[in-house]
Image (cartoon, rainbow, N blue to C red):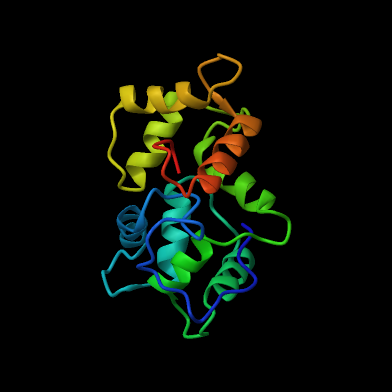
Length: 177
């Protein structure tokens, strides 16, 4: 899992969507809900164990070394935890590779059967596991809105295009962010 190598100490997690918004979330409320799903004990910070638990729930178990690297990258104040500010900074960041590794990691979290496609069922399962309750019909509509080849699924290129469009619009296009 690739992470944000740099994070600003001036990041405001309450910033409204705009040019520096959250490419994978529609707004701060959605980002807060996802953060709270990671923060299992509700103490306002994500521990390595909590991060590991969520990644395993999503089917993306990582080695202890990779988990330590992710924590080191995200925990910019070096207190051993990921705060909401650090989480928000990561979610609005671009890596030096344009975010390609993050996009692949995000795609893989949805593509549970590793067939290179995100189906309606996979999208529904992943979003609900993240606490973003939506119906199968809503997931079908989300997929239909970006399904360029009409196969009823989202391949990586479609996912990448959707995320790029979402980011350029400030994450407010109503699609899966």
